[in-house]
Figure 1: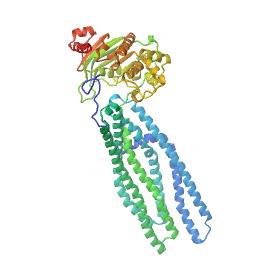
Figure 2: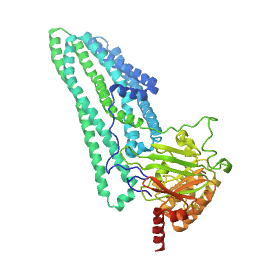
Figure 3: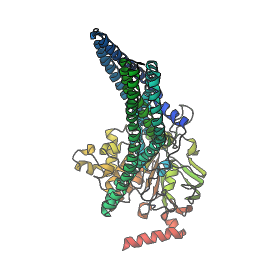
Figure 4: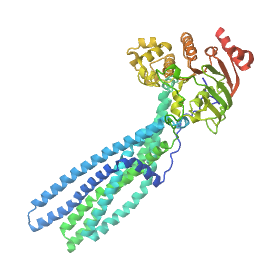
Length: 617
């Protein structure tokens, strides 16, 4: 198995404790609104209805101070107040019901916005190019789907409606107050303007704190994913306290930035109440003097004060909308960043436009329809990043099908990278890779990968049942196909021992299976796919001698009908290969059979002598 960041089969990992995430892009106001509108657009009719209901509720609220003024006038005239009381009661009940319905519609729509955003983002993230995933920690990507999309709930519905209805309600209230008494209105606006200017200074601070808080939440997800991904290593190394400290540091960062955002939001919210209370005292003093001078009536002052208290709601709505927008822009920027990551195009060709490279692929495909693939590397050069040395330096070899071809050489020689390039996980910097004489870059990815079975170095097993893991790459496999592949991969005995057979849960990453069992599951999964090209990367490294010998015979049998490429450090696995490609420092050093290479290549001869000597001891 190729290990470490030296030029070889695996891309370099990021430094310990880093998130691997790139700096969140700074979006212009226009780009932010465009991104928000993209999420909001499919639901604009429902949002418009919710806004209309909110406006109706606002209008009923505005009518209440006028009804109260009429009530005071009736009391002064000793007239009947029954009709006015009934009108007030009706306005309150009707306004409350309408606003409740509008609020429900907006909340339901907000959840739909979040669902759509998550579906879109998940679809993109699962189609990311492998280099993009390797540059960004999975935990940070997961936080984009979970916490960041949650913030869209408020900013795409409530904040838009609150800004609209709040603005209209504010203007309507100010207009009615101005009609009642321009002098008292001037006093009110003077107080609101002074405090509003102070709030405007606070808003950018909310945005910065919210952005840092979301990034810190992503960091928590990244460090947790790192720890749980190597949970046994953490425990075996006695590193629980150190890893806890790393996670706690990230959590404290999130807490600090969250508290900062909450502090500035509280300042902004408290400013609304302060503005109204100061305005109330100013209006009460000036209004009382005007009532005493006979400039206005008592009922006018009462109605004006009611309008002033009513003004709390639209001003609060405006402040909340601005606050939510500041918080939401940070989440939108992180979502947009994830959406800009490069994805693979999994298109398929239209019928009849080209011969499918996959042929008749899949469980149960007829043998005659699955011609073994041929592979050619023609002067291939490749490096994982521009700032790293080349892993492949003009690699050239030919593999006709069927048969078994093995790749051997020291760690870092570039053996596993061959498989990554064939699967088009990476694109070569130079040269060509041909499958059946066609450049793999010209083949639709779905067809290319349908022709290939791949067993990785670490033989990943997914959480779920054993059956789900076996049919993961061949979902249409029949029970007979499964029974056949269980026998060939020596898994039949394991299935008989499991309490629920094939429906037994294998645990997170196959934790309930041994290393050898996980390897056999991975091999069975690849065989069940019935590929034309089978890639085995250290596929028997964790097997005991008996099972390795049995599976070596299975591979030799499969190689009679399928092209098999094998990477192995244990030469006992590859001595029966039809050809062996010896790689060293990113180049093909020699090609031949085991006997030819022992006699003709010094490096291979040394590897063989060392392993056989070790075996003899």
